[in-house]
Length: 271
Image (cartoon, rainbow, N blue to C red; front, side, top):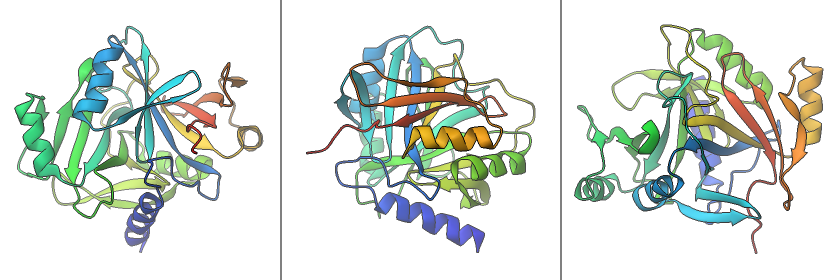
C-alpha cells in the first residue's frame, strides 16, 4: 500500500503542474519542490546545457535568473566549486522525458556525454562541472520533460526518510528502480521524489560543491520557520528578502550535510 500510495501521490503532484511549468501546489505542510542551485565555473555553458540539451526555458523573477522545468527551477551562480556532486550526500538528480528515443538521438548527434547500461529507457547525461542527471522515458507525460527525483546516499535510510517526512511533510514509500529490478526507499513531496539509497560511508556535505544546495518553496516562510524552531531545528541564518524582489529566503542544513534553501515567492508571476 505504501508503494502504491507514494507512486500515486507523485503522479498526482506532477499532473497538477500547470502547462506554463510553474511549481506544483504545496502539500499539507505548505511545501513543494522549488529549485536546484548550482555553483559553476562557466554560467553560460551551464545555461546552454540546461536549455539546449535538457530542454529548459530561461526565465526571470526580478533579479533572479533561472532555468524553468515543470516542477523545478535550476539556478546558477558563478563560483569555483570544490568538487562535483558525486561524493556528497546528494549524488545526482533525475529528470524524465516523454519522447526519450528522440531525445537520445539528438544527444548522440550533438555528442553529449551519456552513460547507459542494459536498460535503453534509462541512463545518465553528463553536464559541465561534473553535474550528472539520471534520465528515463515515460510516454504518458503531458509535458516534454520534467523534474523527477533527488538521489541521496545516507548510511541510515530510515532516519533520513523520517526527517524529511517530519520536517517538509514528505510521504514515505518506495519507488521502482529504473536501472534494474527492485525498489528504492523514498519520500514524495509535490514536484519531486526524494530517493534514498544505501551509502557505504558518511559522505561530504553539499555546500561548496557544484550542486551546492536544494531548495523547497513554502507557503509562508515566517510561519514555517517558527514551526522549525518549535521542533528544535535552527536556521543557518535569519530570513531575508532578496533585494528588488518579493522573494524571501532562508537556509538550513539537514543532519547529513544537505544544504537546503527555503524560499517564498520564487516562481515568476504569471499573467
